[in-house]
Length: 561
Image (cartoon, rainbow, N blue to C red; front, side, top):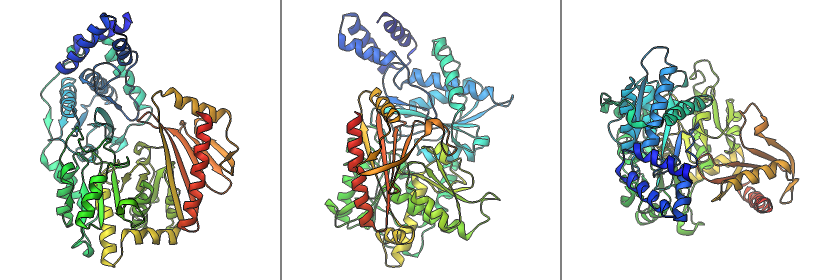
């Protein structure tokens, strides 16, 4: 414990934040009096540090190297600055920084631009709290070498994070290997030097003009101008206590869509997320207020963004669902938007400048997108999870992942974008409405055209992440011969390299009836995720097959825990 105490005292000496200094001072005092609970807490905070990877940094706010705080962010900013200078060939790198409405997001953003400016970079701060897609857009729009977004997206209220993008040849996409390891090495060197108070800082950074946001609004409105059927569309919108509404409302006005009925209690940024236990539209109960608003207003559609507005959730009326409203799965939305993109690409075959137009999705997303691509003669790419991979698919005109992420405008934003996706979905809804149809009718038409694809997910949250590693090791050592009553035809272990994928901690099981089961650890949360996909000749038959696969997956999981 003495080494942990020494680390805590050294951390305390350089911490510029009064709140975390007080938190750590109290904890050290309790440890010194022999408090076992405090000792365990201190050990958790300092026995390791938040790892910087392709997802950047993400963790719980608090003092310590294993928490998100101003010391850790300063180390990350200084390390990232060193990385950018190292690869700049003598030019002065430009980096743009954005932030959302979470606790300390603005503080972490200003620390970052001051450190970037102090290191000699051209540092630019977005004008106010804004959606993540605006930052991703700004990297390309400003010709920046890099971007940083301070956000934890849809994580719990006490989390925050640090998301990194690269310009140039990376076109404003999130980092991938080996950049993550190279940046992490620079961050570790700064941390080892042990005193962020010696890092040069400068207030000589620039504030991005409002014209950057205006350019994003214009580009996004142009994705899907309102068709004739938009007039009179009655729909509900929630920002989930995030930053989406101000920007989205401007896009709606410019694109010509009618204003929605707002979920007023969730429309303004509030990092406490007071009306939801977990600010993720996928979580049970998160959209209850939106459904209540939709019932009262007799709406035709519900649209939700997550707190940083890079994800989109959609719900439609459904008399067979309790409460009368059903949230569409990420796969359902992705297949509809992919269908839209495929039709447009097929009508404009030369749009991708010599590279064949393609659709792309993560390997855990619905195989239905490949069926759409083949139907329209487009290329298809399956990637590892995350838009850092999806955004790099050659010739991509549309990409998605089942976790409510959609890239519909790759010419301007190389990341998932819940606002442009919402506009594209509104166009589909309004166009259908003009023909006397609904989103439910579009889903039925999709099934009739491409087949009935059905998907499900099992998500197991753990308190000890070693349990996840144990389950994965068990499945590798003794792969199952059957899942439920269906034989496993073969297993792909992506750690060994499969289908050109970079190595990843993913197992893909193929069953004799054509069903698919994928198992992988979550990249951002202490969860094990199982992805289930089936195809049937009808929606009813696909549901039955999916129910059987889920029962078998539950049995398999129980046998390995």
